[in-house]
Structure formats: structure tokens, C-alpha cells
Image (cartoon, rainbow, N blue to C red; front, side, top):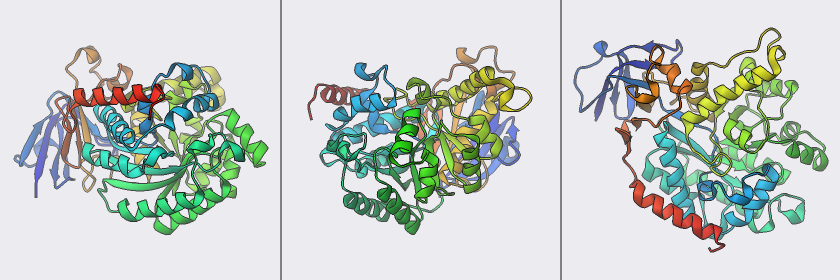
Length: 462
């Protein structure tokens, strides 16, 4: 039995039911779980390891609800820099078709390194194409080495261009193979217990890349095993037109026709959603991964975040793929969520609330990144610093130039000031980042390998 005492934080944001913010707060951790949380004066005075966080802000680990790790290999590709979603995809599909199992492994470590350094302790990834023998196992192996918790989504594409879908036939698979592999992954890797390091999610890619039958069968399989479901939905107006033309439904109504709504379902983006559809989300318990950076980068639009929150819809944050946001900085994504919501308030004004434009606060944005993400992923063991929860936390040194003159409210400063890297990232009581340095990866060596892989892909080599 190992213990860790965390003490003397300038402020500890617990995100508990009372949203307590404790000056001089700390944690007593035993075997990866929080046993006490409160003022340092009320905690044990000794432990196997002691971490003094004087001058630091202490928060729950941030939770990323949507990503595509492999896309770190194709950031800022010139031909895809100024395209909307459908054209961006068509540009990149042929490049992604050249990926190998090593590429999946390397890109996973790159994405998780960036996420960890920006405060993420649990990440959901959506891997939906498996060229040249690649498997979700490659991603899981890399994640286990990195030490960040992962919700590994077994994505899929079965509707190629020859059948009316968007992706080329070279990157789609048969539905029989997809379902067989989905079952294998659940049985091999899924851990439903509190503190799970790996959970499997079934995630057919999108309405324009899979058949309705695959969606239905994936839902049946997921519910048989008690795992969650995830897909892209209502990301762009092009997608809405595609669904109406091919299926005769708006995107969400199409999901309803396939039994793809419920507490076990969350959707990425959900930008083009009307008031009646917000009510469907709330009534059925669907969650949303809000990805403001990607939505801005691809000119997809602004999600109705305020309407979701006002209706009580579960909302978390996602950095999305690193070729559509070109970053995996989760704290920066929380800042973007706050600022984009304010831009929309300035544009639409009183129509958002019926009186005056609502202003999303820094604390609300941090809640989306912690408690919100935990709710979306269906995990009650993470998202707050409370007794019984996983010992997943981050800490940021406030004695730095970035926060000079802003410490009247240290928590708000984390988002109002330009986001930085974290000084500590601890997952299950184990240090992933210590004194600003990643503990689970030699970054210099890894970056060289990653850049070599990216250059090979863009040159057209396998």
C-alpha cells in the first residue's frame, strides 16, 4: 500500500457537489485513490511521498472527450489548410491510407504527451481507419506506456465512395470484420471497474461513412457488453444535406431511427442542432463533445453550448483530431470554449436567453473540462477531487510571468491568461508530469521519430 500526501496548494478546486475552493488545500492518496481531501491542516502529516504545492493551483485532471490521435502525423498539411470538413477529409484520406501500425503507436504517444503536458489525465480517442495491418491494440499499447487513462474507441468506416459514402473504398472495411474485431477488443481490454486504465467504446465514424445496419448492429453489441457508443454528428451543413438527401432525415433524427440515443451515447461536435433536438438530447441522456477549436478551424460553425447547458445536457470538451485543430492542448481548448461562447453572445445577444446575453465564466469552462467530461464518458470515478475518486490531478505554478498581476483569482487566471503547460500531472497517484517534465517519454527522441514518420507519409511512402 503506497501513500502520497499533496499539501499547501494556494487554491484547490475540488469540483465537488459544493464546488469548494480550498485555500491551503491538499489530498491524502492511498493506492491510487483519494482518501482525504481538504485543508492541509486536516490531513495526515506524513506519507510515502510528499508533494508540497505552495504557490500552485490544484485541480482535477482534465478529461478529453474527442480526439483522433493519428492525425498528429498530418498537422498543417498545405492542401488541407483552407478547406471545409468534406474537402479536408478528401484531401487527407489518401495520406492516412498509407499509415502503418508503427504510425498509430508513434502518433498516440505524441498526442498523449501533448495532452498530458496540458493537463489531461483521461483521453477518449476515435480511431476509425486501420490500414496496412493497423489495430486499436497499437494505440492501447502506447497509451499504457504513457500512463494516461484512455477511452479507446473502435471506430469504423464501411460506406465507401462506390456505395455513396464519402471515404474512398481503400480505407473502408467489411461490416463483418468490424463487428468481429469490436467484440474481440471489448473482451480483451474493456475494464468496467473504478480506476480503469482502458475502456473500449464502439464508434462507427459518421453518418456519411457507415451504413445504418452497421450503426444498428454496433448498438446491439455495445449494449450486450455494457460499453458506450460514440460518433460524429451534425458537424457541418454539408452533413445535414447529405443525411436529408440519402436517408430522408436530419442527422439526429437519423440516429433516433437507428436506436442511437441514450445515456450510453455521446456525439462529437453537434453544431447544427435546433431547439427541439436539444430537448431530445436532454430527454434521452445523450452527451456532447464540444470541440470549439476544430469547429472554428474548419469553418463548421458554433455549437449551441449555452442551450445545451441550460437544458442540462451533458457536455464535455474535445480537442478533436490534431489535423483539424492542429493541437492537443486541452487547457487551451477550455479557454477557446469560454471565448467562443462569448463571441456568440456578442453576435446573437438577448436571443440566447430572452433577456441579456449569457457570459460563460472561467469556472464553467473548467467544469466542462472536468465534471462535464466525466459525465459524457459515463465515469463516476474521475472529474473531481473527492474521497473515493481516482487520484487524478494537475497542478500549475502560479509564480510565473504569465499570471503576473492576475492572482486576485488564480483559477480564473488559468483561462483568462494564455494557457500554459502544467507543472504536475498525476494519474492514479503516479506522476506523468513532474516539475513540468514528462516522466513517461523521452521527448527529444520521440519527436524525431514522429517527424520522420510524418515526412514519409506526405512523400507518399508506406
